[in-house]
Length: 214
View 1 (cartoon, one colour):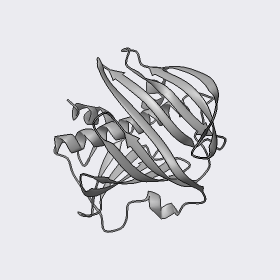
View 2 (cartoon, helix red, strand yellow):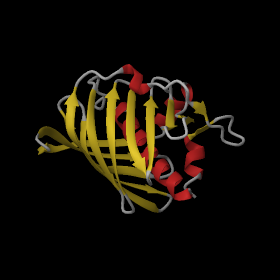
View 3 (spheres, helix red, strand yellow):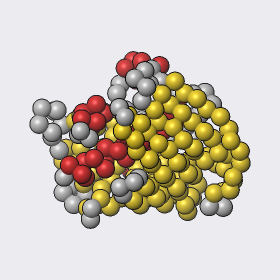
């Protein structure tokens, strides 16, 4: 169970960190394009395949975790992440931070960015970018991101260094289809019950998630 929680935590943190880096710099803006894609993500310890659905401020990820189907819905417009467990008809809610607190956090990061060149990835013309994000404690998240002209991240190869521990995350998307997505994909289905965590009132924030990695 701890391993499963660790994998989920690493995945969520990597995604949110990447989105934060794009949104916090005027050069990087979230794409207003709606699309779906097949995604392969790898670390040194595991490999994971997912189906991704994206709309402005929203993203849905369907994946198999140790034989158990799991769905993650990111709602940046609501500052929450929902983890759905279809087999149990249950979900957990994770807070991404709210209002002024988010703005203050973004100011704590130093972002270095440069364009490396143009590359074709899986038949898509992309721009290869080098990005390094550093916080006040010296923790870093950086590497290369390949982005299409529509603003879709097609490939990512990054390394995070937090308190002396390193983790490499590689991601690649294929079968990208640009088309409108059903709004219901980004909502909690009817009949699902909220899973309460002891002492957390049914939800927890990113700091609580990081503690689960210890």
